[in-house]
Amino acid sequence: MRTVIYPGSFDPFTNGHLDIVHRAAKLFDHVIVAVAKNEGKGPLFSLDERLALVRDSIKGQANVTADTFDGLLVDYVEQRGGQAVIRGLRAVSDFEFEFQLALMNRKLNERVETIFMMPKDTYTFLSSRIVKEIARLGGDVSSFVPARVVNALREKIASQPKNP
Image 1 (tube, one colour):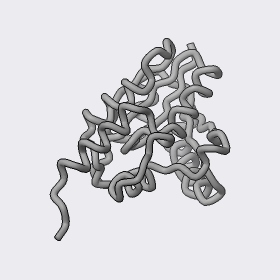
Image 2 (cartoon, one colour; image 1 turned 180 degrees about the horizontal axis):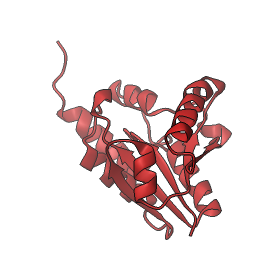
Image 3 (cartoon, one colour; image 1 turned 180 degrees about the vertical axis):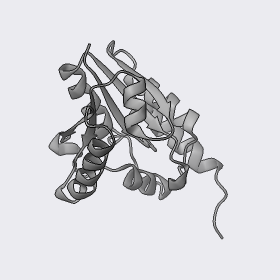
Image 4 (tube, helix red, strand yellow; image 1 turned 60 degrees about the horizontal axis):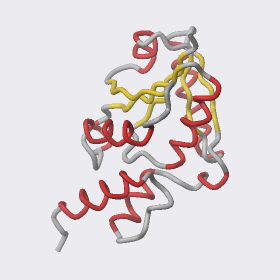
């Protein structure tokens, strides 16, 4: 069975992420969306909340599951029996950083391949950071994220203390 890991913070999970998942699911027998602990980024949503939002977003896709991981990605890939890692590239600016990560992962474990996928052109401008900023400013993010994520963003932002 060919298994691919799609790692990320997914804070929050966007339609661009979902597009990559849909297309990876056509190429691989099993796609694991691996939500990284990555507390260094100061996520808006907790690890459990991000996992729940991803699981809700991928419901109905028989060969896609979601999980969490902490530590080296290549170790997680080995643990889950994966052959490759999928990384999304929105623009040329993403490439340099992603290329460095791919080379480092190859150095750590040459059996793990990295595959770069571009989202549909309608999602190339999307990032979790931009979605959060629009939501914080009261903008409509419903065309950028799955419906459950829209509601979660509203609830999370409403529960945060307001800056004076």
